[in-house]
Amino acid sequence: MIDQLKEIQQAFTTAAAQAQTAEQIEALRVEFLGRKAGRLNEVLRTVKTLPPEERKTVGAAANAVRLEIEEKLETFLRAAQSSGASDVPAQDLTLPGLPPRMGHVHPLTQVFDELMSIFTSMGFMVYEGPELENDFYNFEALNFPQDHPARDIQDTFFIKTPITRAEKHSFPTDRGWVMRTHTSNMQVRVMEEFQPPLRCIIPGRAFRNEATDASHEFTLYQMEGFIVDTDITIGHLFWTLRELFQQLYKKPVKIRLRPGYFPFTEPSYEVDMSCLFCEQKGCRVCKQTGWLEMGGSGMIHPNVFKAAGYQAGKYTGFAFGMGPMRLAMLKYGIPDIRLFMENDTRFLEQF
Image (cartoon, rainbow, N blue to C red; front, side, top):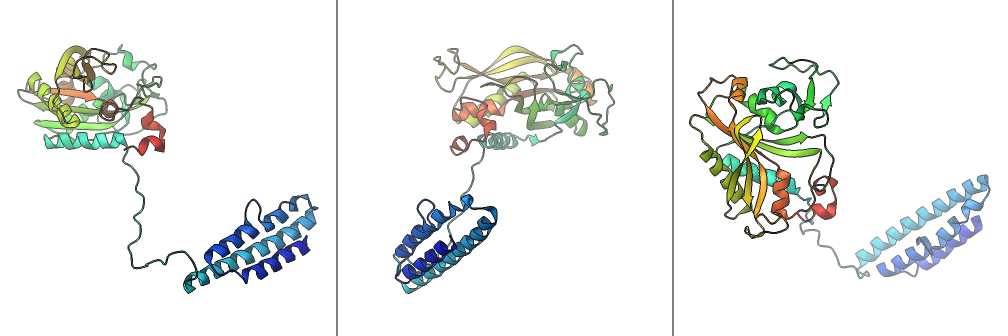
């Protein structure tokens, strides 16, 4: 087999002397190094059948021949190109390089950026907060009763590992820490830091102990917003939400407030928007109602102001929460919420 390798080496040297163009040199590469029918690879396929000692010797010799052929091919190709014998067009090295291929901004990020742009233009500040939260800010300060279903392990991810993070408020250790169930956990934190007038939005992740399907995720994104000042009314809430949706979807919309229940607002409302797809004539998206459910809202409960240390009866305010994932699904016609998390390039490249 060593003799075969020498024959291949000699045959290559003879053939290479006749090669003049890049095309002829490429044909040589295929003939001697081609993966399927290359002469050297035909020899290498039989190496595994040799005894161990002979296999080692033959393998080393074959690799040496391969390296020699590759080096000579590269030398011949450079010589052919510099002499002008190649059909490959000459490269103008003074031209600017090709721009690198850029990635795509995730559709959820695009919606977050647009929402923050809309709200900051209205005078809102943007705040973030901890995803690992204590019971006081996630439940107690927001007027959640002790028997509220959100405090059950079926709905909330409770953390058993002891947490030593210093906090302003003490709370019973048997309730401990949770992965925040909403971005509303920042309401009282922000109120403790700032005095009214106050306008704030809090974008971020929240966590719910629930099954994943086309419209639900256990890791979800929310955007909380609230205003605190004197003489804030439901009218201010109504105008803010309508203006938000009109700027986000670039068309006039109607909204309506339906009575609802949230522990931290009173009165509380579910927010509906006129269907973007059928102009309220009824379609599959709006389930023939002409309305799309967009989130929750209401006037901030006096107990929340009390937890923040605000003077009773001095201020009023409203709060609202919505899911940017749902807003993005409506904006871009995305049918399944799970697509946001799958990192499928076929999906991401559309944006």
